[in-house]
Image (cartoon, rainbow, N blue to C red; front, side, top):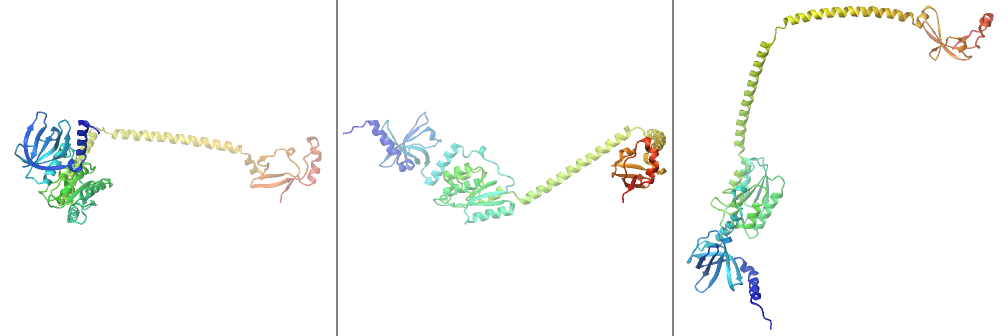
Length: 417
């Protein structure tokens, strides 16, 4: 036979109770009795009926200042647990609502209070909407009239904006996860400037998807400013509290996100007129300043006529000096030209002389020639080729004696045909 310690059994009972999903999320209605409030902030009481009672505890961390007392009929939300120290089965309460309120409304108030405590509704975290959005995301049903109304308003007020629809169910058991998915999709779409989460009016049950915690947290986590346009003006959802801006209707949400193009046009015209007037004023002021500066300069400028006359005199003197210098240079150049002309070797050609050349070099002695060599002879009016036909003459002492013989023979140079 196995014997267990009290702690083992008590712990087993606590684990068994707390693992039961049914007991972990309960709404229980009953009459408050044995109400006791302690300085620690914890509240102990019982919920009872004619033939049953349940021990309850509301800890300080969950006590949001609920006002109830013995004899009140309430609806309480919480979970069932087992307290091993006293061996008590107790209902740990986190929210209390008067019994006259329906279950959905009580759940609404409970979630609202918890999210508010977490700071999801803080005004300081809410962002302003862009003044001139270029891409507007809409999370709503593609089949209803809501999307048509939103498009109509945006087309009338701000037609240059592109509308991006993320279709989703807005009612029913699968609506909440699909709304979350639509908001996530729009956040992942490039260049979305603002998001409208919209649905038409309905009962609390019809709008319940917008009161669910995943939707609230999706709106809270959106990186794009979000406008809630759910239901009619009197309808209020958790989404309204979390969104950056709440609109009373879907059409009003479209009006809030889009500026009126007519108003913008008028304001631009006024601004353009103001800007033009300001520019003209500055131009006129600048002209006046320039005129004043010119007048001041003219008054400060000395009489330049005397200086102009003096400049003319200096110019005439300098011109005469330059002309005289030029004439002197020209005379000198003429003398240089005559001197160079007398030294020009080609000038002698005009007097009947000739030059014998080899490859552009002057041949100035017969000893520098060879039989058969081709030379060039330059005369007054041009040059012609020749060929050496006889051997070089003999030395000077025999030259005179043989000159006559050489002349009687063939000439020294032959013209090339």
